[in-house]
Image (tube, rainbow, N blue to C red):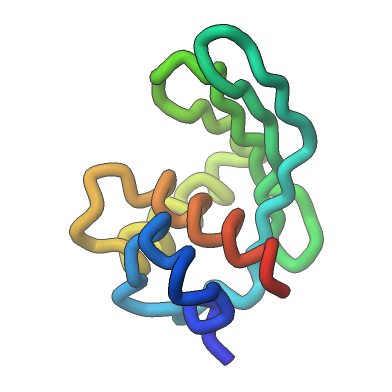
Length: 108
């Protein structure tokens, strides 16, 4: 079953429908920590490929962009290419990809 189809219909508005899911099955996202503060919720998560950490993702919860720390330049390149294939019309395809993986992780 596709990752997107696992997400309940009433939740799908949170993520865009992917143009393709080719290559997605080996990637997962895990939220490691989150803290609520007066400006929002800051969080840290890990992006994995076949169970191996390839990037740390964080957001300060102040309306700013996600910050990515990739394990290697090759990992960054592969994730950027995958994200552009999955969300070709997104202005922030990696953020869209991580959002999909994050929400899908809640629904097995």
